[in-house]
Length: 229
Image (cartoon, rainbow, N blue to C red; front, side, top):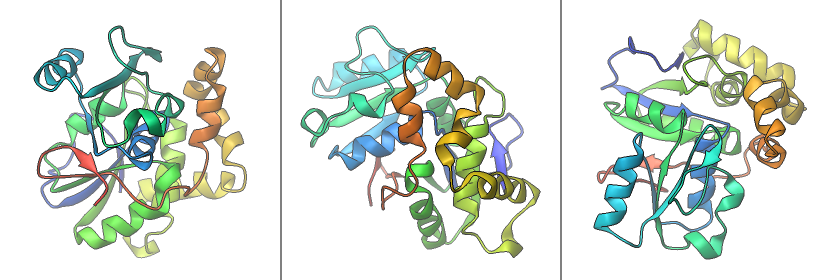
């Protein structure tokens, strides 16, 4: 099943949930871990991010509002902001307009991971290992459905057995099947992608279209930080 986050989410205690915010939070958080960070923590509130760093000055802060880096933060929400030399063996707190808000909405899930096109196949494999009912939650853009998130969700659930797909999953698969051979062009149809391109962030859009370049998935640990298992 696929849901954009909303107030009437189903009870999540028995679900293996993957949150998708392709442009750009979950793509960026996966990249942060891929480049050697010990953990990444999505938070909804900027003040919470500053509070966490006051407790541990070695924490890096990243994030955005309206696609622009936040004042006083170390980096924005672009995967290109996080070089290996910057994040190696560090903890990174991220706060964004859409993706980290969606993670907060599904915090009651029994198992929670961060997905995007960059790790779609690995998300499916991790959900299967979790041995719970699968659910993909699309962050959307400011409360509205986002084409790029449904496209990434389709890449994930296209691996699911057909018998386990609800209507939302079938719709996402249909969109993914239409664009799977030209994901960059498919993503560029999205209104949020057009906004990012207009703001000079075209490379972020193209990077987010890379399919299965990562073989691991950020999974929430007992500490609430996300890390590679």
